Image (cartoon, rainbow, N blue to C red):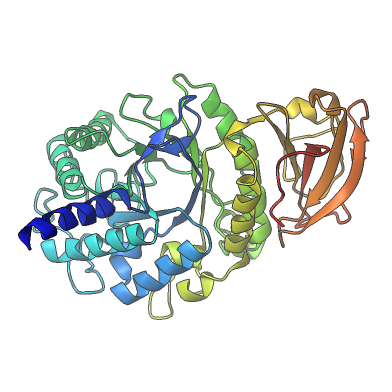
Length: 453
C-alpha cells in the first residue's frame, strides 16, 4: 500500500505546483510588456480595491473577487496597512494589522484574513497587486497616518511580508501608496522596503504607486523597480497618453502600467457641482489612450469600490453608490470588451505611431491615437469623440485592406469596406460627440486574425 501511495502523492504534488492558475510573471525580452514564465503574454487589467482587505469580510470578498474574475480582470490592487485609518480601525473581524503599531510585529489574526483573500484570488486566477502600506504611514501629507516607518523597520516589514508570501505566484508588490517621497528619509524607507522584499527572492515583480499626475520613475529609477506605474488623476483634463510617451523616454525601458486613472462615478476634478461626474466614456477614453500608446496594462477604478462604500460608512469625496451596486457600472464591462479586442491580436507587438494620423489632431479630449503591429499586419486607431480619421495606409504593406469600426460600448463590429494601400480615405463614424468613441481596425484582405464577434 505504501508503495502505491508514494507515487500518488508525488503526482498530486506535481498537480498542485504546476496546475496553479497564476503562473509567475516576468518582464518580456523587449522590456515593454509582461508575460508568464513560459512566454505567454499577460494582459494587466486591474481593479483598484484599496480597502478590500480592511473593510470586507470573507463572504463579501468572495463576491467581489468572483465578479471581477467573471468580468475578465487579472489584477486586484489592494493594501495591507489601509488608507482609511488602517492602523487603528479594525478589519471586518475586529482585528488590527500590527501589534503596538510596530511594522515588525504582525497580528496573525488580521493576516489570516489577508492570507484567505490572497489564496482565494489565486484559485480564481487573479493576481494581487499588494501594497504593503498606504503612503500616509511614511509621509502624512494628508490622511490619518500616523507615520510609523523608518528605513530599519521598513526593511524588516518588506522581508516579513515577502517571506509570508514567498510561495504565492500571484503577488505583485506595489510600494508607495499615492504618495511622493518628501525627503531623503522617505526615499530610504521605500528603498529599504524594496531591499527587504528582494532579500527573500526575485520571483515577484515590484513597482511603485505614485501620487496624482506622476509616474514611478519620477521618483525612483533604480534596479529594484521592475515596472513604471503612473497615476493619471481623477479628471477629464488628464491625458493618459502623455505618461506612456514620457516613460518611453526613460532609460532603462520598463513596462508601463496606468495604475490609477479616472474613476467611474467619481466627481470630475473633485468638484461635482461645477464639473459633474465621470462615467464609462471617461473610462474608455482613458483606457484606449493608455493601451494604444504602448502600456502593458490598465487599472480600472470605481469610486464606490476602491473605498468599499456602503450606506453605514462615511463617504469619501462624495461617494454616492455602494460597492455592491458599483460592481455593475458599465465601465468594467466595456473594459472586458477592450481586452477581448486586444487579445484577438498579438497586442504586445503594437507600436504607437501618431504619424499614421493625417488629419488635424490637437491634444485634448478628442485626441486620437493609432498603433500598428510590428509586422505591419494590423492597425488600430481610436477616436474618442467620434471625429473622422484620415490615415496613411501606405505604411501597411498589403495592397488590399479591410476596414472595420469596433463599437467599444457593445463589442459589435461593422465592416466599412475594402481599400487600396495607395488610398488616403477619411473614416467617419456614424455618431459624433462625447461618448461616441470608436476603434478603427485595418487588416489585410484574408488576414489570419479572427475578430472575436
